[in-house]
Amino acid sequence: MASIARSPRSLSRQGIWGSNFIDRIFRSSTLLLALSIPVLMIALLVILSVMSAPSIHYSGWRFLTASIWDAVHSHYGILFAIYGTLVSSLLALLFAIPISLGAAICLSELAPRWLRNPVSFLIELLAAVPSIVYGLWGIFVLVPFLRVVETWLGERLGYIPLFQGSVTGYGMLTAGMILAIMILPYITSVSREVLTAVPSEQREAAYALGATRWEALRGPVLRYARSGIMGAIILGLGRALGETMAVTMVIGNRAEISSSLFSPGYTLPSLLANEFVEASDHLQTASLVEAALILVVITLIINSIARLMIWKAVKAGQTEARA
Image 1 (cartoon, helix red, strand yellow):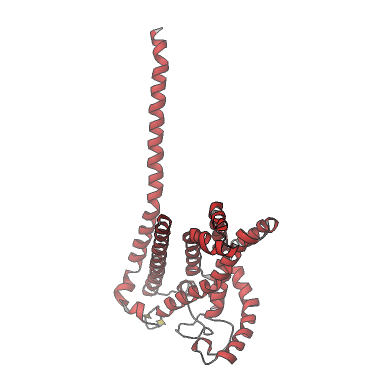
Image 2: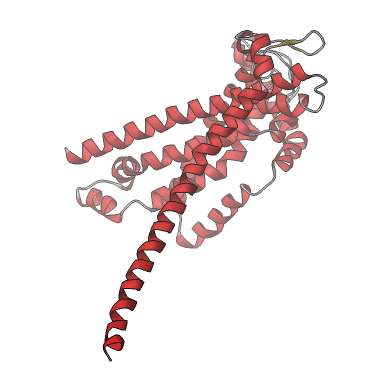
């Protein structure tokens, strides 16, 4: 009887011990999974650095400052591709941010309920379209349309270097617009979710103070959601920096730096897509791997700067809230 009386206590202790043991396993496994992500990033950088070592030793800093890609004479420089990557991505943000934020504000604040879900679904569906489809659409629809637009811009604004040069429809402007269309669903969807998550008390407090809908939206709502909106823009920028096929099909693929938006260009992803298959020697392959390494570093730097801006925005918002 005594043993029977003690058995519930022992079972209880075993249950508690078992629960703590499972908790420790769960904590350790989740920590391991969390650490695996930065480990993978470090491993990626190390592998790319090792594989690009011959190019780093051969070209040095000239690889970043030269704009000549000549596999015949072993002259490699990717300044033109860095320029094309940054300009096309900035153009994409310039086109996409106003449209995305306008659509997100409309769907979260102004549109009737029966319209919000269908339009939101269609916008999110754009993110599932393969990039090759965007590229084909760009060739058959966007290029002929922009050929007319570029002719009109050249006739009226040709005195500005941005709108000078021959008009073909293929170039930096076309690449920027195709990228803008591709990142629209990302920025719009995330911004809409962020605006929807703003507490209703923020709006009600503004209305109680006599603010109009525009004043309430411009003030407490957007101020509350600005860190999330900047995160959505970062997500779109990351997609724009790494996009390959669609940009390769419409940018013209010419290794040059031009101030004109009509001129063909190159981006780092399109350079890798076009040249990697044709790499004929070890040095050329190493140079392409180094270009991939530079693309990763540029992405990390830009995202770090953007994260710093978000941190400052959040800190400023907390300071204003305490004030």
